[in-house]
Image (cartoon, rainbow, N blue to C red; front, side, top):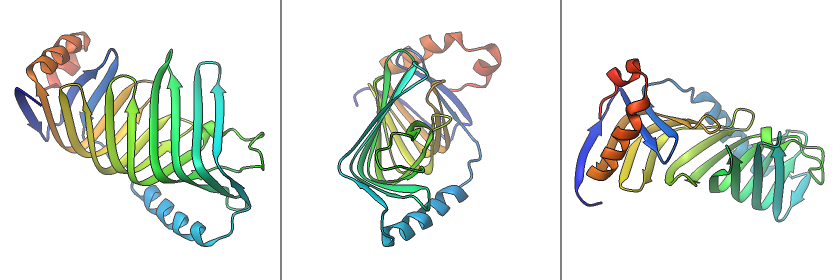
Length: 224
């Protein structure tokens, strides 16, 4: 990345606008880690159990209120009906929203919280929670990518979160930090702590020009 302009570390509040409309809000917030720990334990136990439904490969597509689309695919899916859970191998979750914008999450393994039938015909998979660990990558049509090691997708809220270190990057900028929460439909993202931002002069000018519409109270707190 040429002509590095500035690296901002441990800022309490920082606004960046990515692409045309996505707000990145870096702030201190508390996210409970207990759910992630519980999912780790459940996944380890399910690996030893026998699946009641196995699908190879899995491809599931569903429209949500004619406004968005949810697509889940995997090399294999094993569902444990008595537990209301499933295990996905080499999965990809595509969420299309807000007039065609797209987010693609992918990873090697995930646990999905769902009561599945044999052909998934009576299942609303779009509201299922999905937890993945190992390397997870998220790619947005808005021009940014982020990577982390653990990720929770809240299907009913369309929110992704992690307590792990993250790397977020795009055209001429890079953000690292620890912990993330992103509301996809509202295009709002929060990074918890240990924040470091690196951007070129061109990217910083773009950020400042697009940030001019923020309200006065927010702009007073913002630092770049």
